[in-house]
Amino acid sequence: MRKATELTFLPYIWLGLSVLLAVLGFVLSYEITFWLAIDAFIVMVIAFLGVSPLVQVIVAVVLGIIFSLLSKRLAFASLRPLKESQTVRADPKELIGKKGIVVISIRGNSKRGLVDLSGEKWVAQAEGEAEFAQGTQIEISSLVGQRLVVRAAS
Image (cartoon, rainbow, N blue to C red):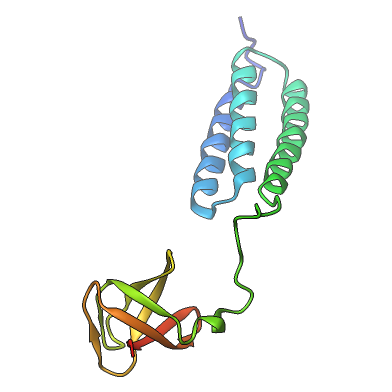
C-alpha cells in the first residue's frame, strides 16, 4: 500500500518525459534523444514498482551516461575508412565533358531530371531550353552547385 504522502505521480512524469523525448528525437533526428527516451521509459517502469525518487534519479543519470557513451561509440563506428573499392571524387568539375544517359527526362532549366554517369545518379538541368527524353545520351557542360548542366552529346 502506498502512503498518501508518496509521490504517486512520478511514473506519469517519466512517461511524459519519455514520450516528449521520443517525439523530439523523431522531429529533430537526434539519436541521443531516442536513447534518453528509453532511459525515461525504464525509470518509469522502476517508478511504477514503487522505488524511491532518489533511486529513480540515480538510475536515470547512470543510464543517461551509459546511453550517451553508447550513442557516441555507434556514431564513431560509422566513420570507418572507406573500402578500397569505394571512391570519393575530389573535384566534381572533373565531370565536365563526360557523357551520360538521361534517367528522368529533363525539360529546359525549369524541370530538372536525373542522369546516370557510370552508375552514379546526378540531378541535372538542361542548358538553355533544350529537352531530353529518358534514354537520351547527354554531355556535361557545367555545374551549378551540385547540379549538372547538360547538353546533347556531340
